[in-house]
Image 1 (cartoon, rainbow, N blue to C red):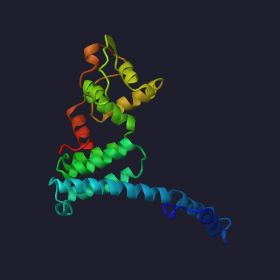
Image 2: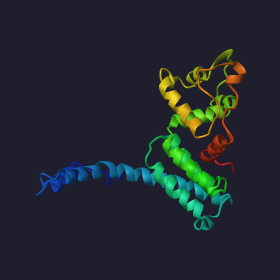
Image 3: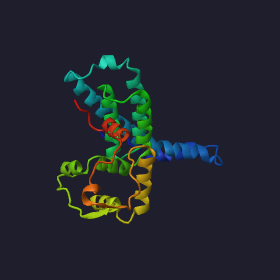
Length: 228
């Protein structure tokens, strides 16, 4: 039963035949048929999963008395947010970004979102950012709390650079200084931190201070789990 909508070998053969009948030179038609079979089923599965999860969370909030779904139906900002967030969420398979888009919808439903203009900007940035942008922003918002949240003891640093701290914290970024610089600059250019370059040497205490701006904090609140 679970494979009922899964394309079979016959489906692919049919697509090839349909695309080729009387139109051998027209490659576009054939490509379109094949692309539809390759992309549409997993995309539809992703869409159903996303909407089911969001719907379930909204229902839980209603049962707790935190929201009124009938009222949300006429909330223009909520509807706009749902449309943009779900559209963008379908473009990624990264669980952290999917969770962030879901949180955006839930926070908007709870009235915990920023004003409409900031909300639109934040949604666009969430779509643009990679998971590494989000991880690093969470980390620099409160390094000691971040270590606590992942069950680690906050390391002791005598002196060092922010680059060394980030690579120590996220070993997968080792050897990727150029990528780290791009991410850091992106976060700076969008007003989420006001620290200079990553290679400046600092004291141990200075390496673990909060670096997000007010705008960066608002963005994190918007994409983080709701505070019910």
